[in-house]
Length: 435
Image 1 (cartoon, rainbow, N blue to C red):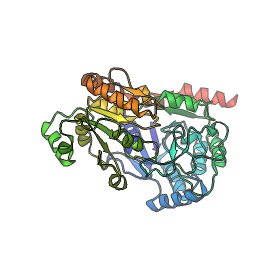
Image 2 (cartoon, one colour):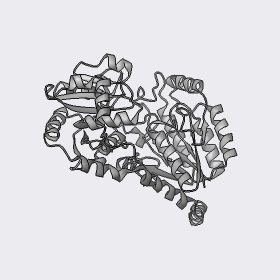
Image 3 (cartoon, rainbow, N blue to C red):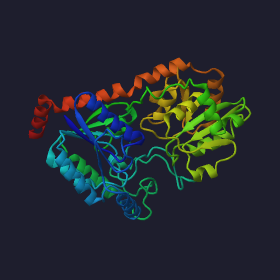
Image 4 (cartoon, helix red, strand yellow):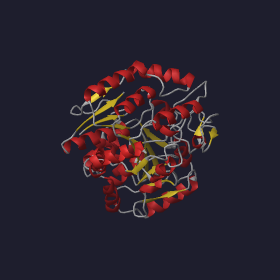
């Protein structure tokens, strides 16, 4: 069995999923590769680079004007198709197709002509909307501002065809045209051309959303994504913890206070940066100290003194040390289809707190933390007091995270591949097409 994965990146969260499945394929005696546009995978993983940096920049620039993200990069996609034909996969596994690197009509013409089983893991909502990747929460005119003016809340035009998009300035941003209705129609036509498509959602929340879209007639599985529990674990090295506290000046500022931690790969839009800034003015600063990881230099320069900001950390041991130091991990994101950082924190034995919105509550039980209504920062502050006053067991947190071990989660995909490639499955598909 040979499976080709296509994703915008071979690193970060969605890239780690694609690369992890390729590893699982190899462990089961199969072959796989990752086709990506940025972020190279580990050396042992076969890969195809899609386009170039300049191709991405050009695609992004034109999309800012035309609102046609996903409908450019024609030559880069033709080259990808030639490479896939040479590789001759038995199956194609799609991940994030947005990110300014693909020409969807060219890719889907190949998938239709090849008539291969296609699995598509929906890491966000972009596949069935005419523009946005997220739509349920408040967006802001300028995500760089800690607190920005609100422009829209809960757009559901994707159910009937999009158009007059209130989220035009959200990723993938368009500064001029609104072609969301056209994009929606063309996506629907391209995707519906595939008869052998199986969808995978990482959460029950996203499953319910997809079932209200033009994808509702396709087979849909729910496979929560997993994390590597062999590297995400409680840091027991006191010397390393002391090093981390001094490296980021945490020790001097923390003192006897309890650390409230937030981690993000990109603090944009609805990821909760402005909520943390407001929370810092509500919680007792003599007892609690907020530390945020993953901020840009622009955000770090504008962060209030009541919060300690740290730039991007790519070292997992360093992240685990910070998770271990924290008394409570908090995410104030308004929309997530999974919630990897919650799992990472729990794997390190740290209790968690989040908003009761989208997929986040699915990861929480009373034994590991709690959730509060989205945007209710007074409720967040009250839960901070309660959880830090009576902490959840580190053992319970770790045990809960073990249910999301990436090895067992990736095996679900291997079983799905084998099922879809079985002779009986192919026969059923052919009969369905004939009817």
